[in-house]
Image (tube, rainbow, N blue to C red; front, side, top):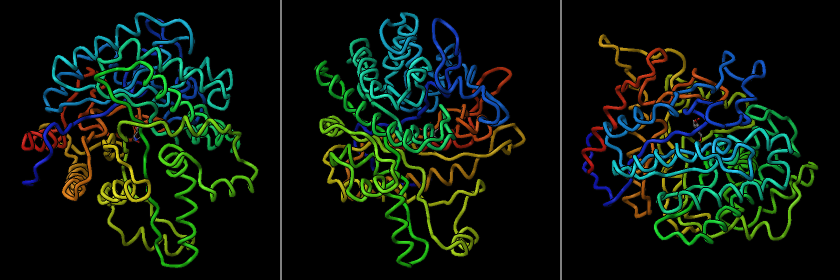
Length: 445
Ligand code: NOJ
């Protein structure tokens, strides 16, 4: 993609993964199961009954991943820590073998001038804590606070960018909708779990400030999927409000505005699903952050009118995977964060990417020809350039993902990687999009 746009000096170009999706080695070196290890053993939960037991085997192959990061030329890598690898009982005694693994990873990244951007919680709660009620139990706030504090003490300044939790909506999907681990279908639990994780996030930020780390910053990662009305009917306008409130605003409001909206609280109270809250909770949820991590994949067109929805999906601009191609979702999400919350902190786009379903098309040399991903990423990079050109303070962009990995309930069927994982040799092979991203980054350095 030709573009003469000049990125700010020190802009971070990254790739992202998470522990539960790539590490494997689920039972090795003292690690205990996470909720995803257990959920995956339940029939019908994951595509073809797959499990994350081996995944990309990154626990044994970090050097392979590092070589690929260097080859592509990124200067930052977003990864996460597996809570049950470092704290097999969830709280209490640390596991030295788990700590060693991460320490080695971080040191190697730093040596290669690749800034680690490390997430504490990317959906993989230790199963031992789920057995005590998981995120529905208010004690989870303390459990997470303890885990966070221990990680800041162990790794502290080695990590320039920490994030507390990734996409807290996953707790709602896991406790209310059943589609994610731990697979409960209880609306009250779902709301309580997502409230507790937001308070837990604040507890971690508090612990971070107490450590007084000089070379480290902290943020959170929220996904914004802005609803757009398909028609201009008042019903569709109302639906947009309702869905925005129940989705990304549920997380952004307490973090960036220090409260839930009256609309949301009224709605949940009427439904009888409102969560138990304490006044101090909001001091915690709204702790000052150093940056905002934005995951942005798409917008969500909505309508109460089935025919309007059907017409939209016939006429819209779609990729082969049937998701809409709407790159301005990035620009609009950044703008919205400033307009709605007046944020004064920098934004990092901590995830952006797209997937193919099933087998991918290869050329005569066996290279995956993922032209749709190139189209998608090029569009989003233009949108990023537009936001930067308007003066929004964005400090980095992370493409999801370094490699095809365990895409949660979709297992290996949804492939988000810019490199392909050969399941026989466990080697990574760049797809066409990896060369595209490599060239793009190099042209911007
Ligand atoms: C959101 C999540 O953070 C990540 O774990 C997931 O794989 C990607 N988006 C793609 O769905």
